[in-house]
Length: 419
Ligand code: GLU
Image (spheres, rainbow, N blue to C red):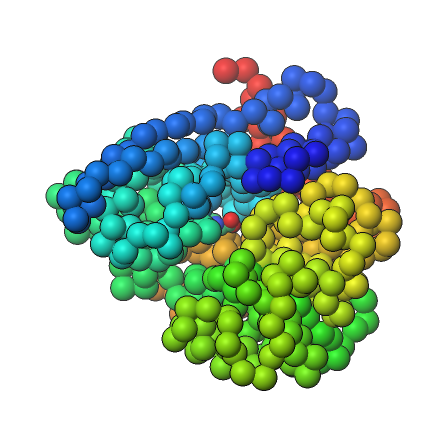
């Protein structure tokens, strides 16, 4: 199996195939659920504030919409491909289904390096994306959100672009989630994915009879998911002994002060040079002696090359598709508890759903209400997955896929199979 970015599609197809066999789906139904509803490739040519015109490829995939309009983020990286976006859109179908929100799965990609763009240049790119993609975006079609390389300011510009083109101040319904709170966003959305990851870890510790305060943790990725998960798990008393991003890694067996590290990262733009820690290569994160590993960076990170080095007994998949199937099998044979991505990082899309309903109803939810809804939904779904896995003697990933695929199947059958 390839280990590159399109590995995400291979992983997603493999996981679906295993579930389809276990659920005994015939090939027609399998095809009806597997095939993306729509795949679009668009060229955008934004003119940047300095007068230079650039070209970027945009991909939009609506994987499935039996349960509702497609939902999923916009990934902006220099290497994103249509295959990667297709795999991620498929993952969103299972994620929304499993966490129980009335959405299908979708995803977009913009092939550019956000680190090479100024804020004004990125705004020009995002506005060009919205113009190019406008026929594919809408509260009943596809509702984007932030993903790797995009953030709440980008969502603000998408919403502004739409309302501006309609000549109105607000939009009818929710076109995009993950917006700044001042523009109809919801409190706690930015932290939701990272906090959701930690809620699943707390549930895992409860099931395994482990005290979170005695746990050591290594976190791969210090973006929106990794940094929040690290801070939140430290707040619960665990010791974060290692963190890394794509450029650098840090290690301290006594525990890293995550709040101080966040301040350092904001000031310096790098993890490097943080006092009191040993620096290490980012790939060394997998060999760190720890109880819990949180891969919260890119896809296809846990492979046959590093799986044997992993010492953690709990792996919480903050990223989408971080484990390739062969490595997953090795982890299962070692009885490592892997909390699968479609459960572990579903907190983000769950709070996106709260944002969607809040905007539609012109309502304002409090942070307390958002966090209560998030923590109870994550715990409920964790228990459903855990119980099914125990009952059928399968992995948490397999149980999560069984529940997710079965719900999509039920929606497809309930709608009726004829066109
Ligand atoms: N990009 C996030 C994910 O992969 C959030 C998607 C959303 O909120 O729509 O789950």
